[in-house]
Image (cartoon, rainbow, N blue to C red; front, side, top):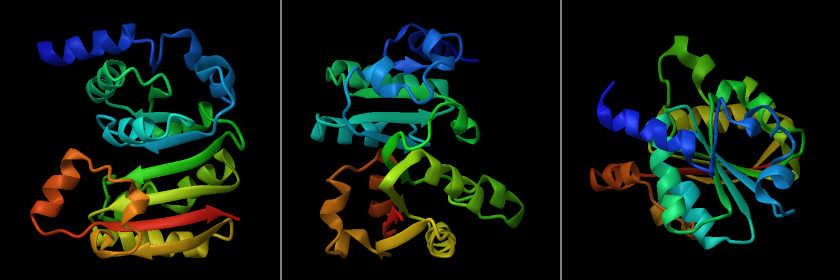
Length: 219
């Protein structure tokens, strides 16, 4: 492991805005994010597979009356997001270093108001369907985490993942698709992504890819 990654891992271990294995909150936080971390009753928004946390941080800066949690398993990415949030003094932003497949260990029933899924790995091969973050198993978990009427948002540059997500959401009776578009930047829905673009999204659009967007609600 390189020195830079080791430095990031050490940073996460010491950062107050990172919840990860070895810290007391890691085993206590489920259902208690408002009480034990944020110390308020504001709505909680989660970004899954957050990478460096660009979306989590962008939304956190725009909506100080909401709490935001970025979830990713990569410690070096989490550390970068943690540092950026600290530099901007975003006390309403936290990061959880954990695999999304273990999300039931960290979020309680009805604890979240929104879930964002922004440019996840599309896992296009058939044998990898179990890893797609909008497969029926994951959608069932999200439905459990969300409050009644809670929102689920998907942004992706990948046509396959967009169409797959539309299908699984439309077949899930717990969700209702409110709106969707295969070209967000030329859609009336553009303002709904709040002007937040990740590094890779900027690269995708520069190469001519369109950004797809889905807005769904827990029934």
